[in-house]
Image 1: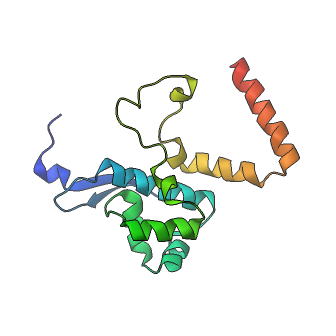
Image 2 (image 1 turned 120 degrees about the vertical axis):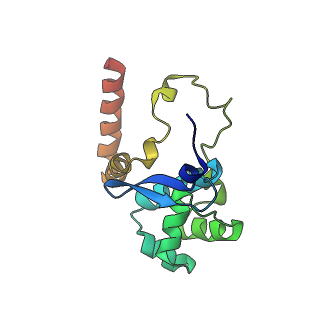
Image 3 (image 1 turned 180 degrees about the vertical axis):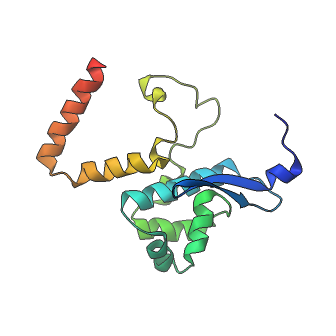
Length: 152
């Protein structure tokens, strides 16, 4: 597939309930920037924090959070530190799951799960709901899910 210089100046991203074409200037987002942005969004969704709340906590505009989450803008080390502090995670959290192409080769059953599962809003809602269940019921639900997955 041939991509022209004009086509590379845009980034397609899922926004709300539709795909959006975003202008990026003359650069494609780096895979690490996109990964870090996805991890920011995942953590924010998981803890139920809005872009506005996160932006207020780190002293920037919510539009900048949007740009970080899409990979359109790179997050500086100090800003990533502030974001991690605001969301209760270490900086290393944002790099978890980042692999080289050789490491990304499927090795086991877990590799059958899509790599972007946690960037799926429905999956994040499921995780958030799961952790809102009282612990003793949550353990039983987990055991049921494990039995059902073994049967399938």
